[in-house]
Length: 123
Image (cartoon, rainbow, N blue to C red):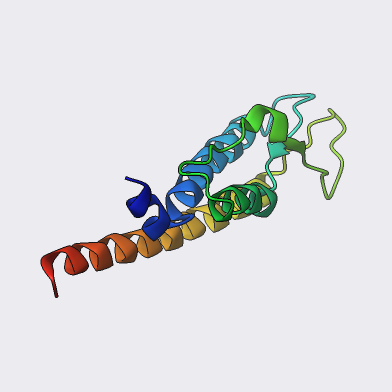
């Protein structure tokens, strides 16, 4: 199993992290009109670097950190009078960007699996 983990690299973790980020951003979107709501996000690059460091250090299956501790508050471009920091256009753009990045990670993972499948079949 460790061989497959090394072959797939960081891509399974990137997919999981993108999925969890989509849930966080969806929560921001759902609360865009909630007074006092504070928009949250994660530092995707930093978390993925931690996971990649774990993989390079030889950990067979490094765990994604608990995102509850990694959540950051988003600073709004324009402050709302009701204290809400979720901005509809910003959240929609972040969600769309994250979705595209998810598809890219999925494509990379699919290519890796396809390559492993070909290697196993001897092609």
